[in-house]
Image (cartoon, rainbow, N blue to C red; front, side):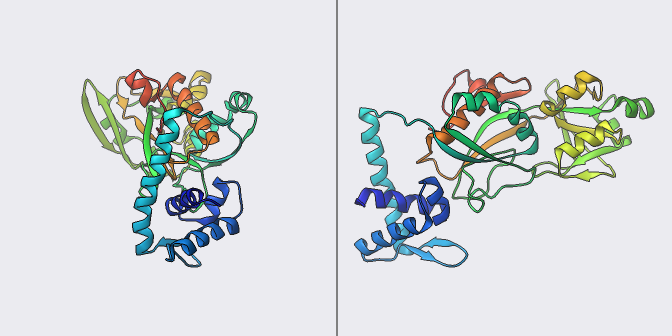
Length: 312
């Protein structure tokens, strides 16, 4: 294998922190990636990566070499871009992690995506908790919480609006709140996902207001919150996206309509800015389009009035 290919493999391993993850990225096997790194180390006469049974880490020589290797790869990328190159047809599997609410919304729109990308398959992981993109071997994560890992790339790609809801039966029994502070006298269903807590934030006429709500039911699933609200258990703060059908059907009613709950930021998280496969870019582009055209969602590109790639 040529020197540049070995350099590219080394950079990818350094960014991903896993031979198996890089093997999936390059559609090859873990032993092949391991042999490529060993070949590069043999050529240089130094050990670049320290291997243990649990994880990989760069040696001091590896850290130094990585800086120069990235400069070389960037220069080659710039040279290639200067003369243009045909974009590959997206193909292969994308492992995507999303919050439950986003996954339920996205699943209903996948026929359009697959019709446009017949050679892509999607392995969708739905969870309201955090994803470990590297350890779980995911290609992309959509999250309402910014990643804390230094080795990954995070971008805010849009926002999602929330709404306060309750069942008609609950409102009939307990009445509707007139102000956010009235929620202190109500049974509230507390959604305990990452990035959410009992502090519910509202805004009206440019003034923000925060209420520390109380409730007997705490749960880390947005779907469980929605079902509990429909059952009359209390007041819930949920993404508008997941409550539209229930509101239209009369199973839920909106509350405090003149007070706007604070929007939630939507983050896209990738293992690296470089070497983003065409299949991953395809799902990113599709998600951005959905953000721009869906009520109660807003893309950062739409806010700016310009449609542009999420990741350059």
